[in-house]
Length: 469
Image (tube, rainbow, N blue to C red):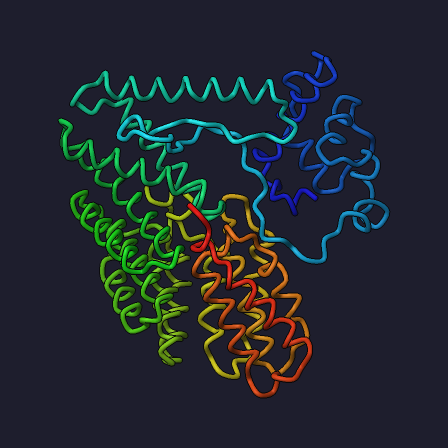
């Protein structure tokens, strides 16, 4: 259950444990539970199945509140407890609710500083009183940030710059894991704010460089947002702006990252030669770049080469990606996390995506299974619903190309169960590839193929771009 919730990192589990303890203290009016925590060794014993005695009663109460099972079941053998009751044959690609944290959201009118509003995401079990208090605190935070930015006048002060930096970091980490709707307004506001500072503020050279970098990252995320909404033209416009900002920041790794983004946009728009060109441009700029951007660019080159039918390019690029992975060490872009880094599960997905283009490739199913397994076991910060969905569609394609429909519905089920606000352009395009493969004459009259085709047609009829905004 811990693994399924992506809580296997101690700090993540500890956060949920402490929050549950405090909520239980308030619910039961028991002050002894306030601040109750768990040690790393205790967590490792619970997670690793090394428990020989029942924990203290207070710890038992919190565990039972967290998982809604008796503690003896939670710490007992899976076959006698949650294995039969809680096991999920299919993994829904839905991110667990994030921790409540301040976030920028657009207000209903106004612009500039007035367009920024801090709110907190709801926490399961919150009552109306707590929700009201959190809204009041969020409004106060919004007012405080607006005042501090204005009080610094036309000079960009360190506090405002730090706040902007933290907000970009939050959005970068959240982008791969949340639907676009709750993020888009924040992205627009942060980009506008950073542009305003550069256009009208008095900034020192070091501050200007950081502002240009933050503007590049935000413009890059908006380019990805435009792409996710199926608007490649706007996506490329934002990407070019991101490159200009990266150039003004004189940030080598960011320039290379934007070239990767342009390759991604061109690839999903069916311009595979252009995708290969942008990946090559990025690779030519990675000399001296230590972060994972170099790994991403080689994987993009492999995928573009696969779409062009260049088998040799696939092998060579995937091998180069492995070398880049071995040599990589986190840089300042990787520190932003999320969309700005390229973790191992994502690398495995790209390898599966490239291999899926090859006809009669015996390794295609193995690559896709490895990618699906990697996302099932991914650390929370490495999880991405879009790439996980892509890995599942690659697995379905590999099984179809291998000449069998066995396991196709199993592979596609988590994808087809995605809510409409998660049906971004790349996922829809991947699902359509499965639809095309199922229209092969071999499968036209097969009942299971017909059922899957009908589900895909219903799925693609309601992409995120069709939702009201």
